[in-house]
Image (spheres, rainbow, N blue to C red):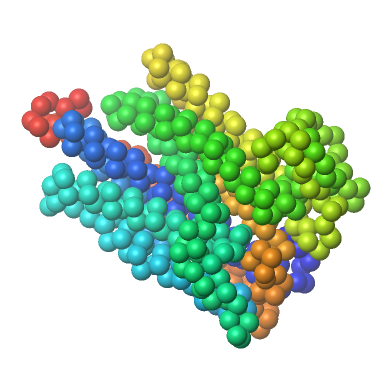
Length: 455
């Protein structure tokens, strides 16, 4: 990000970045929890075991709180397209407005219509229709994610558009736009990353209850489902979805790939930097520890593939904060690797029957839940910083998109207001979530088929 504090674009980018980062803390958990609810409702139908319904009732409340705060924090971002990014909205609104409208009209209303039914309608609906409500919520949350990611994918790799007579963008092919190859890869990668977040949170609550000796059947259920799902999702985030995402960047944004790896000189047998510090002035990576040929193979499929360097492009085409981009990408990769190692070991211990008696591991699992949030944030920073200096890659510069009539003072004032408001909102959210976790799952005496339940 351009750090010129007198640049209006800097403050508009900072404000949007802050509100977007804060907002996405909540949808990533709802998308990550949604299929847990579906799975547990399905298991309840199949087995008649009330513990699965208990899990759904408990986590549906957590889902609902996240959904509510996600709605509240998402609304200001819609307004910022008009207040802070009016020139961008005028230029691209004919395209991106399509999917933003679809997200609101179809996906959001589907999710919001059934989330209340999921939380409060179990007795009135009965088991089968309650299961269908869980499916509708899950489909709505993931469909919402797809429409948003199609919008972002267009900004990364524009397809299906035409330039109208007045110079703005319009839709040339709706199907091409909606089926953007970048969107498919980004959707798979992003949704699996959200599933990692949901899995870590489920695991953390299970570890908390186990450490405190509370709700033993539910704790075991959360630990088993959370660790297994987190391991599978963490592996899939890395490969094939992360691998395909890197290949998309290498194909369509080669200068971004060079910046992500701090690579200034192009060539075959390009190395992946495990450790290093980008030195922009000297145009090199300081103190590197590298894996020979790995970048060529990962980005293009062979060790002899040529990887472009930053020096092959004019400096005004470089991402405008290479250091932050480089560290965001490498920290994300580091955290993802740690997730795989941690959950592989936790799953192994569970298989051995020793997870619940391993106090130190339970503490690690309980305290690890913030890190997927951090990794998701770093992933989005990589995507958005890497696209710079473009708002729509190759078509429209960021410097041309902000609202010229909004002063720095106006933007800073509203940014301060957002920070204060979101701080209070965050405290309220944490209080409500803490109260639900402290209360724990509702305990039942009799199972749904009349058998004695475990609790």
